[in-house]
Amino acid sequence: MTTSTRESLVPRDGLRPRKASARRRSWRDPWRLAAWAALVVLLVFIVYPQLWIVRAAFTTDDGAFTLARFAAFVTDERFTTPLWHSVVVSLTAAAGAALVAVPFAFVMARYRVPGREAILTLLTMATTSPPFLGAYAWLLLLGSGGVLTKALRAIGVPFGSILGVGGIIWVGVWFTFALIFLMVHDAFRAVDPSLEEAALSVGSRPWRTHWKLTLPLAVPALATGGYLAAMRIFADFGTPMLIGGGYQVLPVVVYQNFLSEVRVSPGTAAAASMMMVLVSAAALVAQRRIVARRSFPVTGNRVRPLRELRPLPKVLTLAAVWLALLIAFVPHLVVVATSFLRWQSGILQWEPTLDNYRRLMEESQQPIVLSFVFAGIACLLALVLGVVVAYVVARKRFRVSGPLLNNLVMVPYILPGTVFAIGFILAFNHLPVILTGTALIIVVAYFIRRLPYVMKSIETALGQVHPSLEEAAMSAGASPRRSFRDIVIPMIRPAVVSGGTVGFLQMITELSATIMLYAVPWVTMTVVIFTNAMQPGSPFGVASAMTTILMIAIYIPLYLVRRRYKEAAWNL
Image (cartoon, rainbow, N blue to C red; front, side):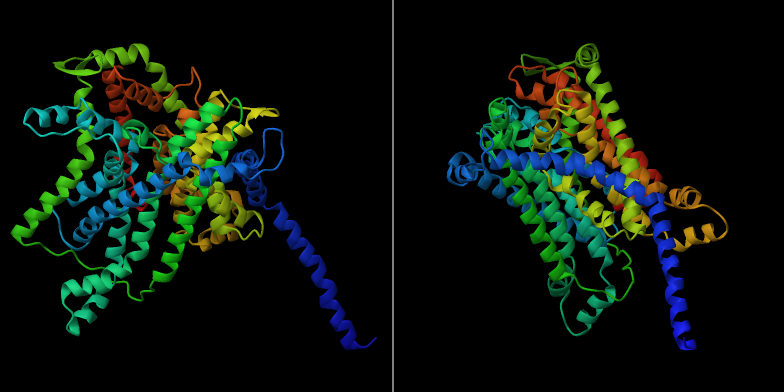
């Protein structure tokens, strides 16, 4: 054997044990085991329930394959009309929210507005307010017997009520405009001033520069904000149920059909649920195509300093800004005020009283406790799984579990709450696992449904922690677990706290899934508010008191987190 032959064999033989050793070390990585455990959880509680919806939609009662339910769906006006209504309402409300948010965001991004921090804090709070709270408040104001309705009639204005498609759109505009504002505001702030300066230097007028340059650069953010707003309206169940006035939209139809036929066959509701998912997925594809086509790389990193407004524009700007905030928050103020007034047979009496809160504590104290307990447990679960999934996605390069986790964790975000709940009922209503009718199904639903909020917040923070910090700790003798505990966790703590807070608030205000999954005695605050608001002559004062407590549970934690971790909360 020649020397060259021996030399060629040595590295080849020497590499085999190294590769095997590296493979063994890779499989011993505790994060790989954690990734597979997280994947199992997501498969069980996301994929498995949705497969039951698919099965119910494509099979007859005796188990035979069929397309009849989809054929009936696309030909029956009982379903096509609500689908069309849902699309129109979502697009119209999102467009209206954008018309309010974009000028608002441009002014706040370019000019020094008095009370800027207070305005941004209020807008951040507005993004967490559940739509059904606004719907209930506007019902008290502009319903058939509302406070403003009576006042308008007293002065001769022939106003009927807010019930109907106009009310759904009105509520949709004001509970989503803050979401679009936050995204577009950041985009306007990120535009490199040198680009606009270059356009102005060649003779372009300021308004033309903003129209042809600044606004197109913000289109990706506007598309993302518009998509999120439209999907929140499309999936909203509480608003059309409260103030729809018989105007049928798809989430309500799915809910009604499922309750009416669940004891016999859930197939029609399952087919309608799949159509809702297809619409949501199509909207997501359209949003991503717009973002991909209209994204422009910017090489500069200058930040434009805020400019001062002249006295008259400053007054007009402040008036417009605070008017928008007043419209967004005045319903909540009305709810608080009416919770201290007496109601008799559903009619407001202008008499101060604390009886609503006394009655609430006597009759509905348990839903308050249960809401905090359910949301608290679900939030802790979401934080644990969110940290695992975020770390695997951001740090590890696992070929199978990493991409699957990254995609699966976002599925609940695009699933409407009614669809999500139907999947849970179909999947966990029989052996081997029966959760329907228990408190556990509500906790698990909260945990899985709001996991994307927690995970994405932590993933963003991990992207700002350089891996070399962990490597330096391990090179000094620290174990991977200790480097993660002592290096990574302290650096991502603001994102963990803020992400967990937003997740908790989303859980405690969840309605669409809760209203389908709850069973006595597992009643939550949102169920109490919803049922009291839907029944004529019901104790609206108790519902107002419960709504006030729920708003306190929302806004105080969010304010404290934003004040303590301003940057992390803003990124949400």
